[in-house]
View 1 (cartoon, rainbow, N blue to C red):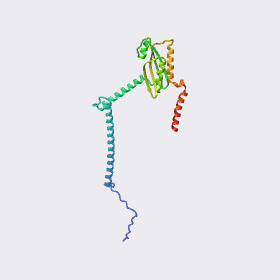
View 2: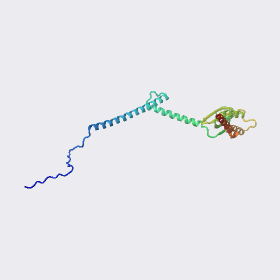
View 3: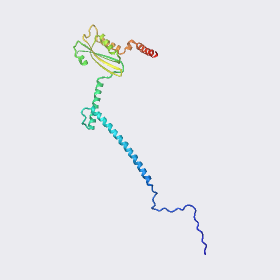
View 4: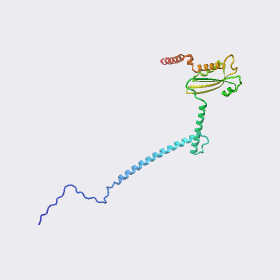
Amino acid sequence: MAECQPLQLQEGPILLPRQANSAPPAVPPEMSSSSGSGRSATEARALKIHSEAERRRRERINAHLTTLRRMIPDTKQMDKATLLARVVDQVKDLKRKASEITQRTPLPPETNEVSIECFTGDAAAAATAVAGNHKTLYIKASISCDDRPDLIAGITHAFHGLRLRMVRAEMTSLGGRVQHVFILCREEGIAGGVSLKSLKEAVRQALAKVASPELVYGSSHFQSKRQRILESHCSIMSI
């Protein structure tokens, strides 16, 4: 009888074949429910923020539309589209009027300027829009300079010295600059041996002195005045 040999087992784990219908390990139900509830809470919070932003946007739009209804007449019963169309028409009309005013009334130039024109007879009526006889001499004088308190007084004094009467005056001011346009008349016309050319030059020189007094009196006069103001201010501060 043959001897029985003992069985020898290999050391280590024994690998068993995996069955074909085996499923992956299942996730615990408590983990799945917690992740779903967190995602739904985030989505709900984002939706609430978006809804609040939309509500505030609609309130701003309605407030602006209410303001436009108060500014534009006869728009209380208009819908939003018609109201906006009316506002666009109003803005276009305002831009057109502003452009017409700018073209009709030029802004004061940055440099000091004086211009003189003389008219008589029918030419005077056409150029100055002032009705007068054929013997009356009309002068259109324009002066552009820095605005200052004594400007009008200086211009009036210059006209009185030349025996000119002011018929009409226009003024345009912007940013410290001013432009005056005067229609002047001299009812005795050109008399006493005074030529039209010499009268124009006299008016031009008189207004040029008013427009740029520093050229006549020198800049030292104005510098000393400013210096006196600064010295008085410093003396007050030192007391």
